[in-house]
Structures are given as C-alpha cells and as structure tokens.
Image (cartoon, rainbow, N blue to C red; front, side, top):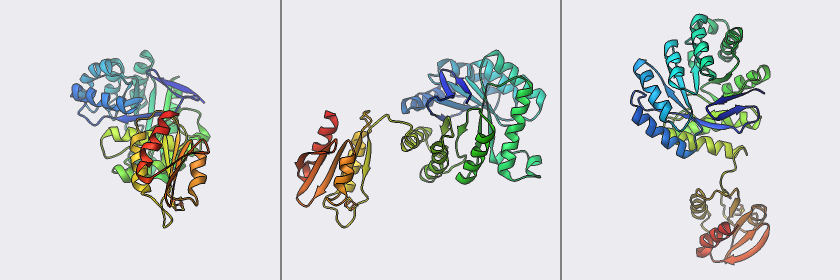
Length: 342
Ligand code: SF4
C-alpha cells in the first residue's frame, strides 16, 4: 500500500497508525490555536487539522504553521483560494471535501500549489455533504465512495497521486461498510473516523465500534475520534482505541474482573486506583486485579503482575508465580511496588 508524508509523519505503507485531532479555536487567533496545538501534542497527537474558513484565517496560517510543533493540515471547504494560500503558508497537507469543490479548474489550482510545496491532499468525504446529484441516483454510502472515486480520478488525470482518503459517516455500521468497500478498490492510505460521533461517552462508544472494527480488520492508517468535547479528549480516546486494538503499547494496562458475589475485597476501588497510578507508567505491562480465588488466580497468573483477593487478604502473582501474600489494606502499595520493580 502507498505511503504519504504529512510533515515528518508517515501515513500508510506499514507506518504506525497515527492519532489526529482538530483545533476548535478561532483560527484567526493564532496564539490560541498554537496553545491548543501544544496541548494536543502533549497528549500524543501526531497531526493537527485546523479549519481555514475565510481569508482572515488563511492570513493566520503562516504564523501557525511556522510555530506549530505538529504538522498542520488545512481544512478547506468551498474556496480553492484558501487551499492555495494554506499550501503557500506552510500547511503539511490540504483536506478538501469533494462535495464542496467539484470543478476541475479549481482542483487544478489546488494541485499546482500542493505539488509546488510537495504536500499531499486528503480527499475528505463526509456523509453530510455528498453531492445531491449523486444522492439522487444511489444509496448514501455508495454515493460517498463514488464521490471519492470521481475526485481520485480527477487528481489522477492531473498526475497527482500524493493523496489519502477519508469516508466518514455518522453511524458506525455505515462507516465500516464504506471503508471496507474503499479498501477493496484502493491502495491509498485511509484516514478513519466516524463523523459527528457525539458527546464524550456516546462518541467514544460509536467511534470505538467504527474505528476499532476497521483497525482490527487491518483497515486504517491514521484516525481521529470526533467528540463534542475538548480536542485533547479526542487524542486520549484515539490512543485508547489503538491500545484496545493492540496497536499501541505505550503504557501499562489493567485487566480487572467485574466483581460478583464471590468478591472478597474492594476490587472496584483498587482497580480504579491502580489504573490511575499506571497512567504514568510507560512500561508495556498487563496488571490484573481480580476479586477472588475462583477465577482470579488464572487471570492474575496470565498477566505480568496480578492480584487475586482471598478470604483473608490477597495473593500477588508475578510472571505466573505467587510472590507475596498481603492484607487487603496493603494490596495497592504491594502491587505498585511489584510494578515498579519490573
Ligand atoms: Fe467474581 Fe472472582 Fe470472577 Fe471477580 S474473579 S468476577 S470475584 S468469580
């Protein structure tokens, strides 16, 4: 599969799946936008997108691009001149929506600017902005893919192949179907996401189903979790999805039992405490917190470190072996000592 470069970040061609987000500041306010880009980078964002809705926003782009520590993608709707200005301002990629920029002469201008500055284009199809002409003759998901294929064809005729594609729908099932169909036909990198996914909890669930299903199928080269929330939360969510899909091993993970009537200790409290403590532990360990001696020892043994509650305290396992018996009140400290010693 093809690879593109967005600034120094590789997308596709076997590169690690990267997490993106988008600023929600007023782009005309370069200082506020750069402050948010800094927070996103701190959270682990690899590529940031900013909206460039008008000329004033485009005027802020040289300052934003020059001072951003992340590659900046200019998000363009309707006006090709803003894409050209953003490419000249130092954007690392231009995102265009084929539903909004359909004319070939305008696309040609964007291609010329991207070629001159050696930056790629993302064809960003959204289910909410597919051309009504296409929608009049086919189902929405087919129209989304057709819209993308037509724009890819236009770019192909212009000899421009430095592209990636997104096909975001508002529901997880449609998102999954349209990306699967695209993967069967295209070998370009795919930016994966569910659009307008919702508030933090519902959006995370919808995105986890949509993005996670695709990633588990090996589809997706870069992701964004769209949340009606602070964009930093999008980055945390994106990294959590990558971890759950086994694509990111940047920190220790907790497995814990749901508890039941056999539980002998405060597993809910202990697991929460352990998870919070492990947020800053960058070792790729699995730590099991289990409530009883029935199923607990099996899980605790399978983890790198585990604890299983018993009637008179708890047992700590390390690499499958019992290494310590502790009281319930000493459980957290003893477990964390073991974690830090590995
Ligand atoms: Fe219940 Fe024990 Fe399983 Fe926890 S590990 S859910 S306490 S049986």
